[in-house]
Amino acid sequence: MTALLHFKSPLLKTPFHPRTEAANKLWSWGNWGGYTTALTFEDLAMEHSAIRNSATVYDLCPMIKYRIEGPEAADYLNRLTIRNAAKLSVGGVHYTAWVNDAGHLLDDGTLFRLAADRYRLCCQERHLPWLLDSAHGFAVTIHEETEEVAALSLQGPTSAEILRRAGFDIDGLRPFRMAEFPLGAGRLMISRTGFTGDLGYELWTTPDQALPLWDLLFDAGQLHGLRPIGSDALNIARLEAGFIITGYDFTPADICVREDRLRSPLEMGLGWLVDWDKGHFTGKAALMRQRDRGTDWSFVGLEIDGNIPADGAILYHGQKHEAGVITGACWSPVLKKNIALAQVRTKYAGGENLWAEIYALRELHYAKMMMRAKVVDRPFYAPDRRRATPPGGF
Image 1 (tube, rainbow, N blue to C red):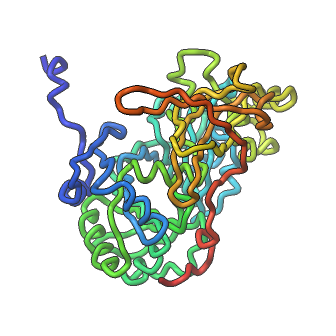
Image 2: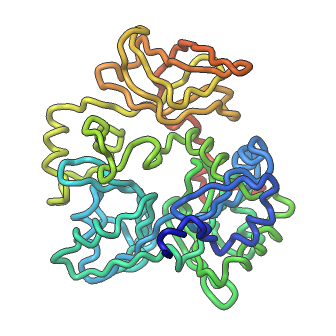
Image 3: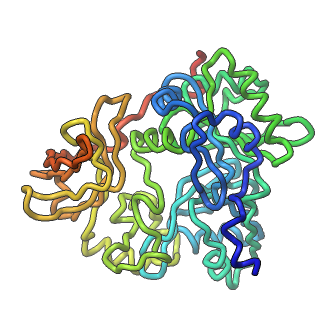
């Protein structure tokens, strides 16, 4: 009987929900991994503007988090992921991905080395069965700690100044490094990481410290334009930064139904992550074969004529031959350009004579438009402040 009434169970609420609920004037909510998450709080344009011109906070609690620890944790992660986890020093963070035996992407994420024998892996999808199966024979324990960690993303050009005013000395914190600080009766870990391609930090603590942390940041950020943002504004920023999202830009191999939709790291522009010399890892043989013969698909950035976002548009070569699909697109308020990310057949990835088939809603009717698309380098937007150490003051 209980199973039949599952639809009456609300989504989980994060430790920050009392604050995000009070701030969500539009009452715009979505589902992220079984949690209630804000899509837009008040005004999408202002939220995106704050990412690029002041500072923002975004609730990261729904992001899946795994604690991986034990004397063979580094060896295990080297077998699991395509990057060399042993080279990651304590206090460091790197972006990585993992694949199945056929070399098809399962997910990507960030790996934090908390101690010599302890890591945290953060990702979009849940993979505990795969992680446990992959751990066979290794002296390692794996635990999902999503509900045990309260996390906020603090991003934007004034984010460093807000942390300074809140009492945290982050001037020496370099990109992809982390440091610990006292917070009330607990601890706060600050990593110089984020998903906006701008200056920013991610803050990690325990659920009991979540609301005090939120209040501390907003007290310190009163003069620096701090505001909460939802997933819609973050999506625009991540597109400007050229970042991919599992389930949007590629389908995870474990849930992909159609064989021709499977993608490898090489096909998604992640070949730079692969450490070919670190020894065996899951999917290495398949990826080496693909590396040697070449890929059927490529992942590219596009600038598209006009100002109508081309999300989901089919790409054509010469307006005749289907060449690929756009996986994410927006009008960039910063660049004043129509940008997109796309899977394109490699033979067309040079960008000559590509066209996007866009359907624009015009007073209840859709107008079909064929707009020229040009392949460009990613990221589309990359301000120098994102790497400046110490960050500038505002």
